[in-house]
Image (cartoon, rainbow, N blue to C red):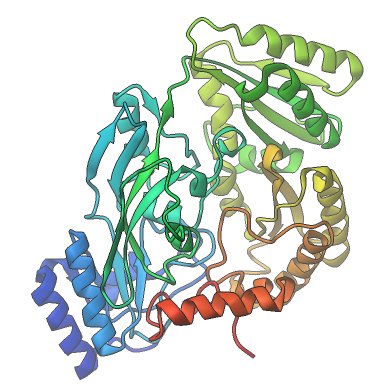
Length: 487
């Protein structure tokens, strides 16, 4: 979908707003010229192109509150934006040129770090990797990990309830948040950063803002959980004859190593082939002659623990039974990093391969294999020209189904729209039929609003609208995102 507006003149009303924003923040932190806004008004995938009255970069929670109050007074929408690495266009303004994009880059301090309390308090603009490194500095682990961790910001991770590769052991972002500081749509600051592990003092208000994609308020800081840092690990990549084998392996490993099973990441043969074709310096450890591949990682916090033996034994038994057809165990940290690079290259490789129709479905574990088989068959029926690949987090029910179309035939969202609609209908129908939901970790944003309305109970949507109306009666917080279009 192109949201590009024509013309670049700044109306008098917008000019006045820009001047007021500059008076609040300093002229160097307010970008109004169209040509200078480009990095901030286009989403990571290049699907959505908008325009803003201004892009602003406040340096503190107080400045964020000042900007929001000013925008509320003018009736101007605010679009919060972190690292702009999202998959669904949630941080992209519309084409009206009346929105203010509020970047959080300058809110990047680590306010507090406690190894004793296993917690860290950070501002929303902190890069995820920076938080990971700060935790390592006090011999702790912040477990959220995903391919964009070198550029994504924690505020965006929280606003989309990001998942990543460590959900199996540590949970998704929602389970890692102890407290939040949020600027509400009227400029009020809600401070719940105590970082307490136990709190039954009324409603757990922070949960309203986790996964809300900035539609209810702007997250400016967070208190997060830290964990003991793993001292030892064992990593293997295995080739599987069918996806059901991954679930069988998971059950066995959980029975033998328990919570030491940290990650289970599945990739179809087609997905790895796409990576091999389009991402340089990725080494594939064996021929791509099996339909599925699985990364298995065990970790433990006790130095000297032998994790390799139980992993070797489990894989040896699986090989004898035919559950596994090939296996490679990492012999060093460098080899482990090389195997993880394959998994972390899926987004980059797929983006380069063509026009990607991506999905973020999650279904009950018992239905994962059936879901994968059904959607592959049905997409092939409605879009035989599509290259169907999959990857996902086997242990938490989240399989990403990608239909990659020839970019020459489908150069943009408009050209691809009819085909995308057919593919989405297949995936959504199978997701709903098997007891799942359409977004596990990427969010709704612009891309999935219509799909959410199609498969979600109307009563649930009405309740969401009620919450939005209560907290944001002026409708200025990231409008047009998450909630389905009204009929």
